[in-house]
Amino acid sequence: MTGFFTLLHKELLRFWKVGLQTVFAPMLSTLLYLLIFSHVLEEHVQAYPGVAYTVFLVPGLVMMAMLQNAFANSSSSLIQSKISGNLVFVLLSPLSYQEIFLAYVLASVVRGLAVGLGVYLVTLGFFELPVSSFLWVFVFALMGSALLGALGIIAGIWAEKFDQLAAFQNFVILPLTFLSGVFYTIHSLPPFWQGLSHLNPFFYMIDGFRYGFFSVSDISPYASLGIVAACFLAVSWLTLRMLRAGYKIRH
Image (cartoon, rainbow, N blue to C red; front, top):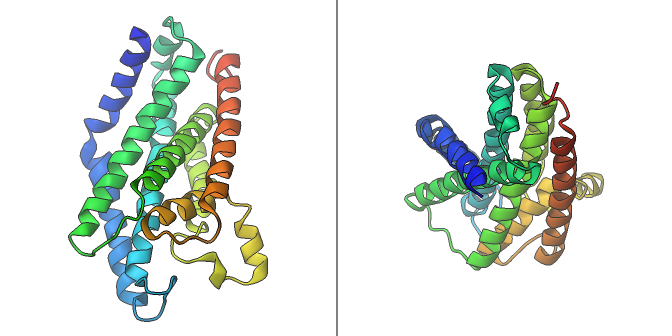
């Protein structure tokens, strides 16, 4: 397992050495989202009975930050390694494709959790946010970050230049994140858009994560967890197949 821990350590150092950009910058941008939306909509929107809109907004923004940064960690690492040519040293090492997968995913989870925890702690200085169940919060944070970390590997393998990776993030990750119920509850949508929201796996991550704070959700947290787990298994299977085959990384 020495090779696995070495690669994991390298991936952790990669984002931590530029923590101002990879951890603190997302915290700042998320806090700006919170301050702007809470100022504009606090008096006009109530998502759950007895829950202020600003308090409702915090878990969604925390989860959004975790998902986006978990994806960015693995995808940016792979595309940088491919373009700079140092990915060959990972491929030549006696590492199995399962160890490579786990190292990249675990590093993405650590970055996602670090950003999410940072955003949560900062918001506590402005708002009082109750936590109903730390277990549900942790489970959905872990599963969501792992799923986006695995998806980031797929994007990093597929992309051949930074423009393609940016297109994947802008046209896939960003729309799915913003249309997942971060800023609203889907019960406020027309029936057609409610049904469409149920096809978005990001919705189940946000909804289940928010349940851990308020014990209120749009659907059962067990159903959300099952769907998120199924998506993680499917994405992981595809990622492992691509790594095993050397798709676009062995020429």
